[in-house]
Amino acid sequence: MDRSQRDALLITLVRDIRERLDSASSIGVAAQACADSGHLVKAIEISLDVEQILYEVTTLLNAVSLLHRVKGADF
Image 1 (tube, one colour):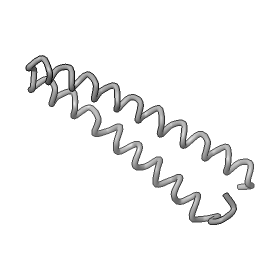
Image 2 (cartoon, helix red, strand yellow; image 1 turned 90 degrees about the vertical axis):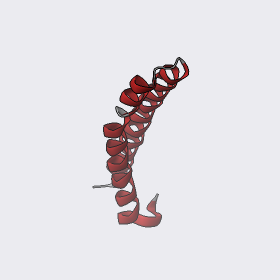
Image 3 (tube, helix red, strand yellow; image 1 turned 45 degrees about the horizontal axis):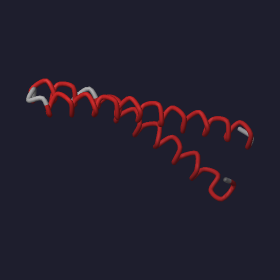
Image 4 (cartoon, helix red, strand yellow; image 1 turned 60 degrees about the horizontal axis):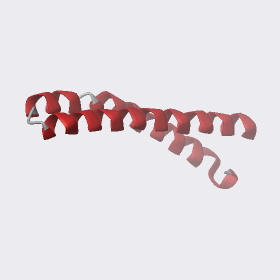
């Protein structure tokens, strides 16, 4: 993989991370709205929807980290 391919991949990974974090943030806002209105059980149910997203973000972040370590100071 040359530098331009690696850079394109990193851009894609970072974009994917941001998109998933935006989704997680939206879920957090919805959960907070439920909690504020007294619907705690629903707030917890909604909050749990973040679990898969966080797993995916962690995996993507690990990929970014690995690419960074493979080529070190090239970035």
